[in-house]
Image 1 (cartoon, rainbow, N blue to C red):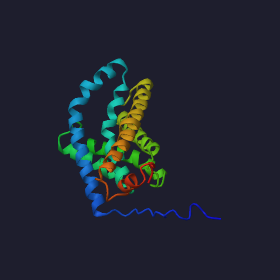
Image 2 (cartoon, rainbow, N blue to C red):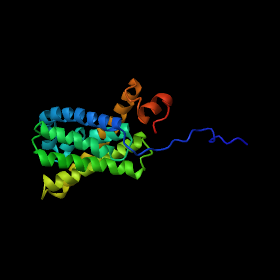
Image 3 (spheres, rainbow, N blue to C red):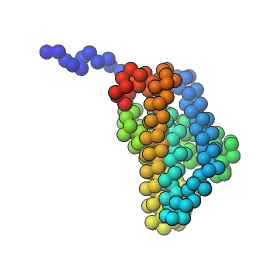
Image 4 (cartoon, helix red, strand yellow):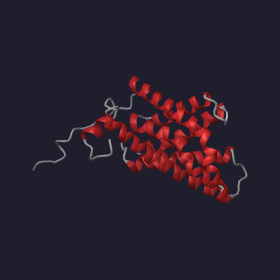
Length: 211
């Protein structure tokens, strides 16, 4: 009897970073930082009405600051990619004059990248499906919420904390998670990721969304 799985090629997961991985992750981080810089100028007018209507709900838009780590991980597909890309983005953002100060901006990037990284680690860096990307974005959002509530909103009441945390998780899941997954797929279809497994899988088997 023929074994249907015997003809499938065995893919070996490589955790070693190549020079191209470092370069592309760095470029992604810098590009994300430029988006952060623009968003830093715009977020207050956008979020102020939500904050006034329901304090804490302003975090529904904060996922913009979380996408770098998720996108970097989806493209590079190596351990540490989420943290690396998010920290590069935060560092460049700090150098561009982020209003929260250099150290706190970089610290936030590290925490947010770690939140996404832990989700990819939980799946042993072997699944890159949309659901995992959404969970990674949600993880980054939760990490951001905890960090912000400790550093920026000490003593806030329980209702504010709950609304802020839920809003941050939703924003992370949709903007950073789903948004990054769609962006990675779009980049793969252009052929720009041909040197990465994320690009090769997308072009070779468009019906599949995992690695």
